Amino acid sequence: MRNIYLLCSIGAVVLIFLGIYSIRSDKKMMGVYWGAFDPPTEAHIAIITAALNDPAIEKVLVVVNNHAYKNYTFPLGVRLRMMKKVIDKYGLKNVELLWQDDTHRLDILALRKMTNAPICAIAGYDAYKKWVDFSTPEERSSFDAIAVVPRDNDSPVLFDKITFILPINTKYRDISSTKLRAQLTSPEIENNH
Image (cartoon, rainbow, N blue to C red):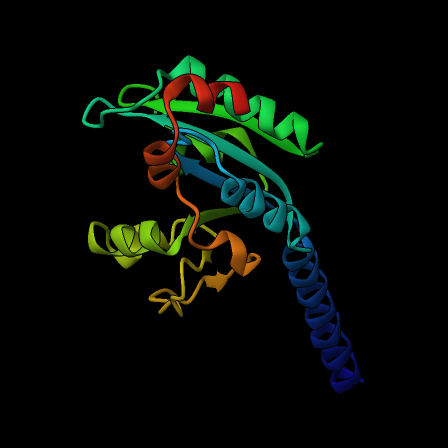
């Protein structure tokens, strides 16, 4: 009789554990995509769209950076307006537009205060490589996942166990804000967004 009771107890504990595990693993993530968006490009939209189409990601926070050490072509207000216009133009739902600067940072600590959802950092491969160079694996592992978007013809090397490839159409892989700025003048860019 004791053996049956013990087996039932162990079975109940296993079922409870599996139930908790499946609930946790089924929870949709909030993707966070930081960038200058100076200006926004079709590649940015392709990345946001790919994230929203990923079954593990429910919502995307687009965070427009405004750091003192960087020289931006457009001021923060203009970049926010352009990004909002592009998000609206493409009818992207479940996207929230935010900003950060050197005193108002949206790092993992701030994000954890905003949501109970697991958090997935979204980065182009070039940004991910810089992040790897200037952070520790422990710092990056404070995120629940990291989505890495290939650039150009790169085959990304993933340095963290929590990373995965977020594929986008290859026609967007070589588009960048830098290349766009070189081709157009400021009024042309603003009017096209």
